[in-house]
Length: 369
Ligand SMILES: *[C@@H]1O[C@H](CO)[C@@H](O)[C@H](O)[C@H]1NC(C)=O
Ligand SMILES: *[C@@H]1O[C@H](CO)[C@@H](O)[C@H](O)[C@H]1NC(C)=O
Ligand SMILES: *[C@@H]1O[C@H](CO)[C@@H](O)[C@H](O)[C@H]1NC(C)=O
Image (cartoon, rainbow, N blue to C red; front, top):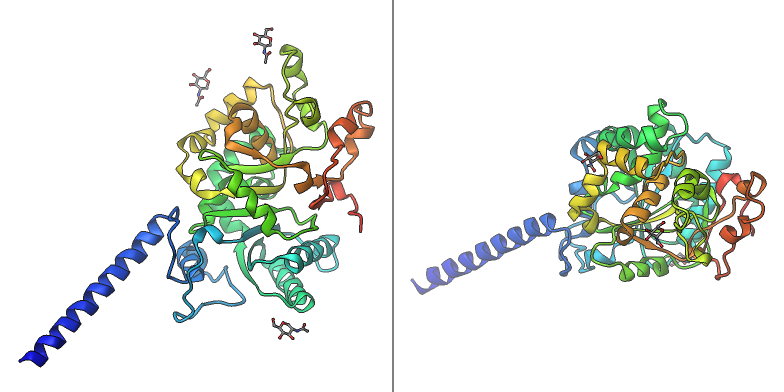
């Protein structure tokens, strides 16, 4: 009698533990914002939460596909080191492949944290990317994780955003597919389900330091900060804002940072506070076609640089949404504007006297060794 009683109690205890654990797990998934310790393997959450369609199509793979149930650990979600990069339309032997390898080696070799590398690829570049990362693994002898996302699937999911932006920030509106790439970052929060924060890099960057230091910049974000970007180091937005600036003579939009101005931002390095982005009704309103049209017309703004045009407008209209990084985190090297009408003031924009942490070889500029 006593014996069965004991067994019964044990069963009840086990059932209660299972229920609590299940509820906790559900709760964990629903509140990505949760700061509490996470006893479920992070990887599993990420894989479970990847878009079903992609997952079913095996468009997403990982070199270390599943983490076993036994390797549970208690890393806070906040401590995730998600890095995103677009790697599409790359042929074997192309300069892009070498740039990507240089980027990946510079990122992985100096990192003191385990990076989750999320790559947006197409069918042909996926094989190349995986090949490059195998050699990076050999070269650096470091642990990292890789995840692949098919660009066509993502473009389909973000169609609304892309068609909002395209008329205003695209050099040749009409080529839908290639345009999609330039606007993906604006909807990354919908793709990166289960992630609380991430940093996206152009593949033509080279990192000179431990990337964990850049992740520390998230600590400086306010409760309504959505993105972190460094200033644009050319007068391109002074040029684009020409009409607005002649109407509003005392504006500082289009002036260099040194002179107390806002020169716009560059999207070679973008930090995402996904929780804040997902919570922000204001941001999702801003993405609607009518808002983008209004904002562009308010500033007489016709851009051609994709997502960074929109981040620049947000930086002007809603400065609290953007954390402005120091120029050392995205030291652009393109000097095109110097020879195109802005010789006199180019250096006021281009100057960056900090110790460089990330080089960005934009407009195909070579990165110094
Ligand atoms: C690679 O790292 C592992 C441990 O992290 C070590 O045992 C091994 O010797 C290293 N190999 C090389 C070639 O450095
Ligand atoms: C700019 O000048 C206008 C009047 O021309 C004034 O209303 C406005 O407050 C000024 N703005 C700044 C930032 O000084
Ligand atoms: C856009 O501008 C029009 C005309 O000024 C205004 O009626 C409308 O409410 C604005 N819409 C948004 C979303 O800002």
